[in-house]
Image (cartoon, rainbow over all chains, first blue to last red; front, side, top):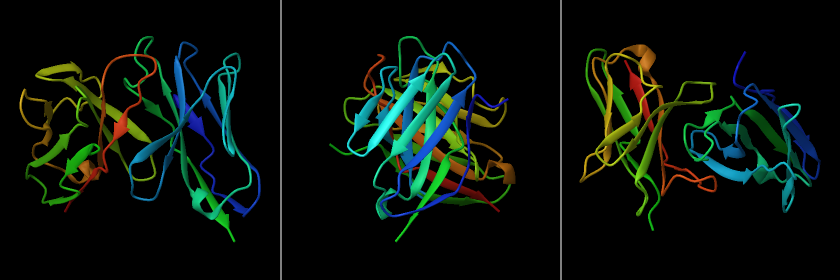
Length: 113
Length: 115
């Protein structure tokens, strides 16, 4: 079983749609959780951290369910520029959230006009 | 403040040659991480270094791969006697400290192609 699992997609949605991505992780002791965005042939960039209380940043909402070991990302009012691969990322280290990040394989999003 | 700088961006090597990948962390960052991304896969942790010290190399292949972060100069990931399976994107990340609120910033990566 992979440490971090994601549906690879692609999710093909029209502009303005709401789309949700899910991710599961295998280590119940994982400490830090993130969504990264990776454009084609570019480096990953942090989209947002994910907290148990849930957090929102503009059109993006992330949720963490520790009991189910499940992380979600909701994108509202999709834009063409949201087309990218979204990486679910976990860190197991209790004191350092940037140490030994564990990446999912990513979910590809295509937003069409 | 320049971001994490990696060079070269693209590197082509013949089987059996050596590949040297360089990474200069962001200014003020003393923690460097190397990751490898194979086609259609997620990034995989290779090694974590601080100045002059290898902290965790649990993700490094046992042979042919080595990394260093000298007191002066960039971090180097060295691959000796490259094989086709080494073809991948190699990303370097840096962070300023160890804490639960620290973000790792990634460089643009080096795409290694072994022919």
